[in-house]
Length: 330
View 1 (cartoon, rainbow, N blue to C red):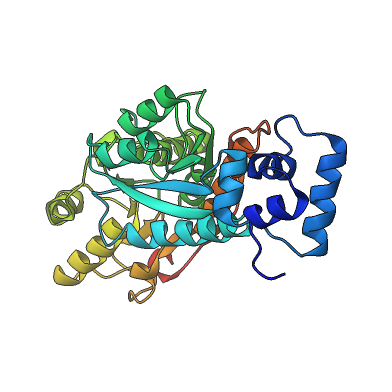
View 2 (cartoon, helix red, strand yellow):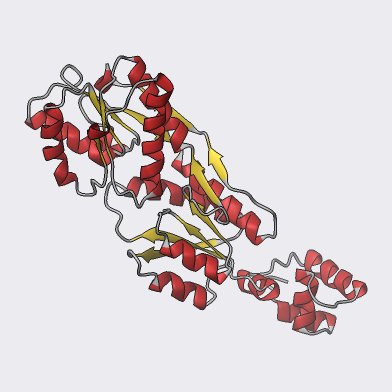
């Protein structure tokens, strides 16, 4: 019998479809003899419950929601794409599909609609903020969810790369090279990743016993067009190098240095706390941190699937990073 349905099983055994569903799912009151009859029948006929039948039997949608920030730009895209590949590979192996929804600032309409309409069994939040409206809403609903990125809320389960240790290690290496007057340029401090990178940078100076000149730290740089003016200011401050929190800032610094005829690394050393395809073809090549974002996405998805399955899960910090020393800091 090919492509049989629950209805076919029920008719063949003279029982109701509900009884068949309960026998398959293991939920509800069904006698052992009936369970065995259903089991024997479906094994004999190679019956595989379709996704709708399984969802009905287990009260599951077999969908996972992934929340992307709507304000991401072309620079952020490689990170989200690699995470999504890891998420999709993991969820697919569990028979789950992925639904993507965008969050635009405080507007969580799309995410709320998906949850209100019971379209997903759980959610993955791909960015964590200090003022985190999406995370607060998810907590209020009680739906299982996992954040990609560290969060200050101890009740939220998150999976993140060890950005603190990575940034501290790279900064320590630069300091050991004699670069004691390092500038730091980063984005919004409402993004927890910005604060984590800043903490790692600062910790490296504390460990080395070297005072950090806070006038060389530029945060809230969300518009890369500001980088040119910052570079001009830094040229007057006798710096040894610039550490950029991400590849977008690093790419812009490299461009401005070319415009100003600043030789890298002869006149100025450059490093980035994040690497992507944007920096692959820069000349000279840029010292940076490499992370396995695909594994990050897969780990977050596995954690969520375990949570949905009723397992006890904890937050995870993944130490799968590499410090890549290249020409820009030689």
